[in-house]
Image 1 (cartoon, rainbow, N blue to C red):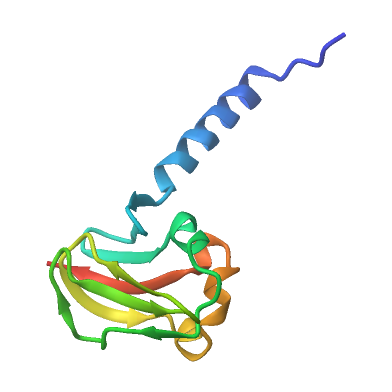
Image 2: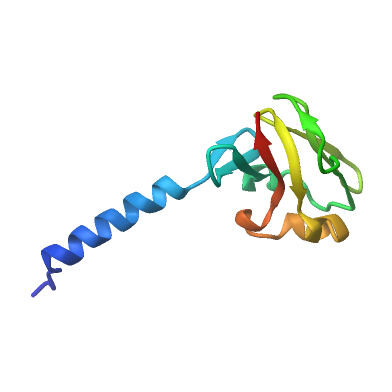
Length: 124
């Protein structure tokens, strides 16, 4: 005989799944975006963009305080034989860069997506 879940457990699982979808990052080409508040954004490298890279030896970062317009280069990823420019989908001021990837960029090709955040922006 099949095991049946209670109505409460079924409802809880439904809302858990719905809430997880709400918190999922939005994707814009090579960048994922997560909002922390109305004007605070976190931008990172998507898994599909990461798959195009075999190794990353250096990353060119914007300075904290830099104002970026939508379409401006966000970071440039340098590999052994390739160079990939990642652009920002939104305008804003850089408030932080990922210090871990700044000192050691090579894990960007193996990190899970949520650990590949690149910059934090204050939207304009």
